[in-house]
Image: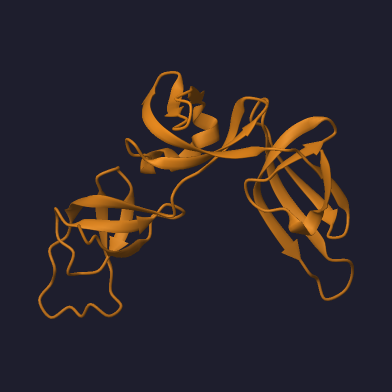
Amino acid sequence: MVKVIASTLRKGNVVDVDGKLYVVLTADNIHPGKGTPVTQLDMRRISDGVKISERYRTTEQVERALVEDRPYTFLYSDGEGFHFMNPENYDQVAVSKDVVGDQAAYLQENMQVMLSVHEGNAIAIELPQRVTLEVVETEPAMKGQTASSSYKPAMLSNGVRSAVPPHIAVGTRIVVMTADGSYVERAKD
């Protein structure tokens, strides 16, 4: 275990609180006009998935668990969870649904992800920032509609809703951000 200052913690870090491991879901540094600056941490207990919220003074020491971040390749999902393979030694690991969470919609076969592994267990996942998906449903473009600021709703091939510019039609492949599903650009493939 390594002691770090609370204000340096980020999403995905693993901390040890009272002998239990927690993965940081959100970390906000709050600087009020008066008083001591604090770091607000929303965390999920790795053992059972219970979510807690803790507040530390920004200079307070917190124990950070040693976690290895390794690249893995997504293979498939089934009732047991999501299956990944280590490309170096071909070891396979099953990751539970609560670790992957709502990012599951963006997982694609053979996608390279970073898994945070602690004592042989995957505790957090980091997807690529962008993925390419196909628009399966959207409204037709209205004549005279400018492409500058208006966006229209669209359903993507992974079942996620997004907002796309008016010139995007059904069947168009687009690039979206995995963090929030927002439109980036038309795919260049």
